[in-house]
Figure (cartoon, rainbow, N blue to C red):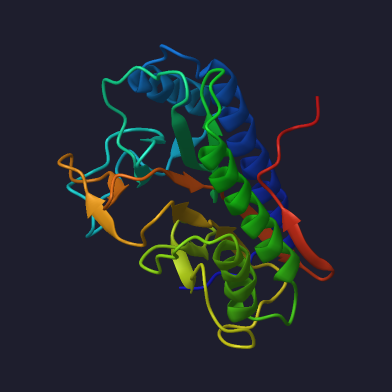
Length: 258
């Protein structure tokens, strides 16, 4: 299903997007050396409930997961990259942490992810990986607009990641979003320009370049959810929800101005 939102729904989407971004920034600030991933999950739950929103994850049970996810945020550490199931782990100095959050508020969903390094030790290779996903995300957003095609976005993202020297996995990528979290069209993190669905004003997309340092192959953790790099190498992930408008693409998952 591909949804095209009305102007009223787009206004609600902006509220949801800001909420997701605000929660992620608050959690980033609180995620320090010694923080337990289960505490991050509890903090996310409290913030979501306080704002009258609903988690997209708690009851989420797709074919690739093991039963309902059962938590409020994805927490992926080091070699984990997607669907990181919160568990009893305390963050260490230099850990690469990805927080991925999706909620619904007033009937509209928004989805975003941030990767960052915990503590004072900043491994250069991890800094470079995070930067590559952020640059690829910016390139994908710049390629989006009315009349552009999904392939234009995929090509822009993939070009940045490839030029940075990272293998690209095509099993998981970006997606349409609206009244539900995962919708068509699928947005691969690499592709050919001029191909695929033509973007229309009112379409929401969650773009999410993610990479692993030296492989494109994933393995599923024993928890049945967390996806890790097959080689144990580190991974990074950046995501925004954007709205296609008459003039281009607006990023919805930006924090509320201070």
